[in-house]
Amino acid sequence: MREGWYKARLGELATVQSGSGFPTKYQGEAGQAIPFYKVSDMNITGNELAMIHENNSVTEDVRKTLGAFLFPKGSVIFPKIGGAIATNKKRLTTRDCCVDNNVMGVVPLADKIDSDFLYYFLLRHDLSEFANKAHLPSIKKTVVEDWPIFLPRAISEQKRIVGVLDEALNAIAAAKANTKKNFQNARALFESHLQSVFTNRGERWKRKPLGELCELISGQHIDAKDYNTDSRGVGYLTGPSDFGFMNPVVTKWTEHPKRMARKGDILITVKGSGVGKINLSDIEEVAISRQLMAVRATASDVQYLYAFLSTKFDYFQSLSNGAAIPGISRPDVLNLICPLPPPDEEQAIVEKILAMSEETQRLESVFERKLAALEALGKSLLHQAFSGQL
Image (cartoon, rainbow, N blue to C red):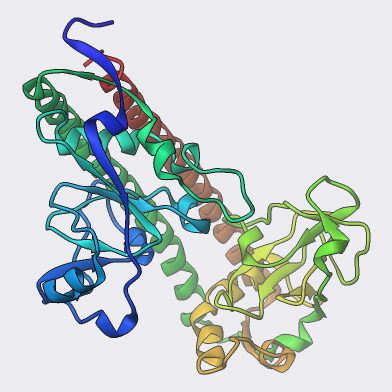
């Protein structure tokens, strides 16, 4: 063991405490005395290193009346029950606060462990490591208290390590943000080109309903008992969650297929929040759910139609707005007017689109590898920090 370091239980260094139930009538708008956080506050977007922000609050009188625990500034809070555990969000509080009974907090003992050091220790671990394997997983206080931690005795040394991690992980976060931005720019350039193709039409172009250029196959629901994740039967696509950048990825199979799409069909999402999202099937045969339709080109190049439909996401979204369950109908797709160039121009357009698409996919692959490398670097630094190597 490194000199000056020792092994302890987390419960020896911090107080582990669950939150309290707060009836809605006691929860006020932001600005009252004490911020009040729920599981939903764990899911705020942005940098994992960001502190949690005030969203709601309660009064001190309410807190005392309900006997709610007051988590001091510098506590680490996280979801302790259900699917929220999988989000793996931990937040370092910047004010004294209260939390609801689905949230757990760890309060560092100031003379034993630095709050930022504690935060980074918990950041290193997946919350599922603390959770039981019940149908509705939960995190028990005793499990968190018994969690072993290896740390320096001197608070000054803990703070030195925190400083190293702050600088390195903030640089990694900035690099991740820059990488994501570069990819967004590449995709925006590709989408801008597609828009220009159908805006700058030539004199020989015609306009035809999509129904004259394709066959449309509506998907059909398959009960959960009739599909599997064991590769038995044919692939089954249930919606845009199965979509990749251009081609779908099968994660479910069925031995009871109903409606089938085939290689070369354009898959369009027609129900749910993803209405208008598309993919191009590269699978010989695959079952599709009622959330999808398959556009099968009959009188135009499929790549041309795919490019055209990829510019219509906002249009299809606008058709589905206001519905209790967002969705578009077969006529919405079949009656869509498609600008159609003569065959020689169509072929040239398709070749250019394919070239740009391949380059965009290549860039996406590069950016994904870079993001994975940055993620691995961050985990490596946290491992080094808590094994006495920094």
